[in-house]
Image (cartoon, rainbow, N blue to C red; front, side):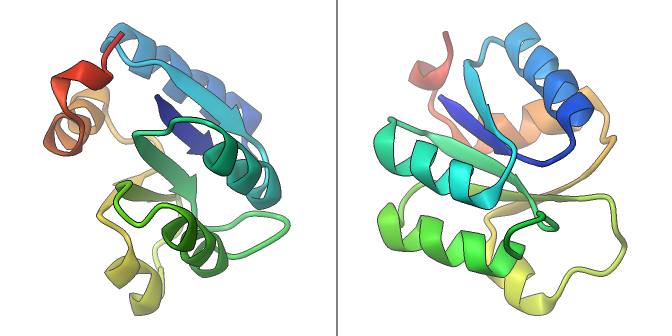
Length: 118
């Protein structure tokens, strides 16, 4: 299961559609707090998270995710040009918002075992 954490509802819907086409199940959270709750209470194989959320920074969110389950890959997502080095060094991968679906697929295949597919 892939957890999408992003306050952009339309972007989340689009990414969920792309993930479904590639055979992945996903669940979404619109805030960092919701994302942390979902992450702690569900079996999550990978997280795609926006760096800029209304309730916390990507650094804070990634620290909470790592503390809860250190082995789950974290893919940082942003539409902005500048992301602090601290965040980039904590993330396992990076995607720009609006990235073409094939790049998303290649990144997921790199981090997820085939059993994570539906």
